[in-house]
Length: 365
Ligand SMILES: [Zn+2]
Ligand SMILES: [Zn+2]
Image 1 (cartoon, rainbow, N blue to C red):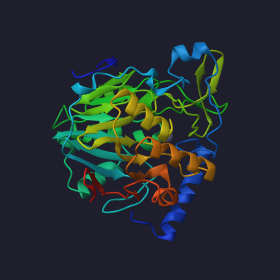
Image 2 (image 1 turned 180 degrees about the vertical axis):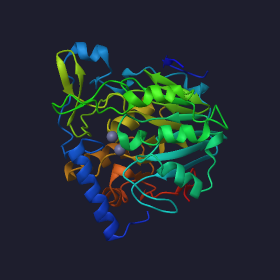
Image 3 (image 1 turned 45 degrees about the vertical axis):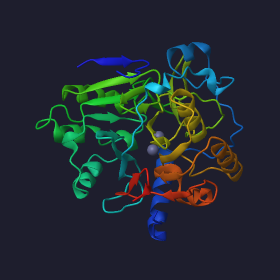
């Protein structure tokens, strides 16, 4: 199979027990030391411009544009409006009917289209949780990966191999954004830490294909991937411990491939995020600018606010209200305490998600 490049593909909580939360906090600390989906707390005023213009040409490093309208929206009227949506959480910190882990995955079912978003951290977690929840992944053709971190791509090969023999087209097409396969290093160590570099040939050997998006693309009627997210606001939601090739050597990895999945529904946009390294405000802004300027019916998933400072959180809440965010359904790295603090700020509230939760257009099931 070949690596394809897609561009402008227009239509073609429950609360944990204190002990559980302490364990989750310990996991966060461990991951922080490993440079995964963690960050150091920062103020939203910190800028994060890429090192050089040449580096920008090589990869879509965060750019600062004057206004969100810098994007050229596709023909919004051509976007199908989804009427039936269910997002089932298959991997997040809080266990439910299935096991919890520091990772994220969810099954999206939108007007009959089935898409797996991220694949969890451990190899077996999503497979086991899907079985526990009675979810058949043999009829899920597509996968969207939010970014290269191991807590989002760890289950991909296991899942593909579990279905490929009986259903060759199942979990066979993986949508990523540009930058996904760039080599990464941890600090000054010369070891490759981007697991996607090794996963790519193994996945292709199983008959699978990667689609790399440079821009927002509609992958099913009313279901979009954002591609690399424009970073208009100086949110800085990554650890800073990894490096990526730049024009003059290895530079800070800003996760240029970080993308979200957007469902264009009759009630507004639903934003599904893995770790939100591009920032929740940037992500929501990008969705409205690139798909259509609609209310955000719900923002679901990991939004990497677990270490946000109070000023950062206040700034975030204010911007989200301005962007017409109706409801926040936080999982993974959003932070349960953060969700509780934002609960009174969104018109329809905020809730923390656990494994097995189902999000529909009518709310959390
Ligand atoms: Zn991450
Ligand atoms: Zn993560």
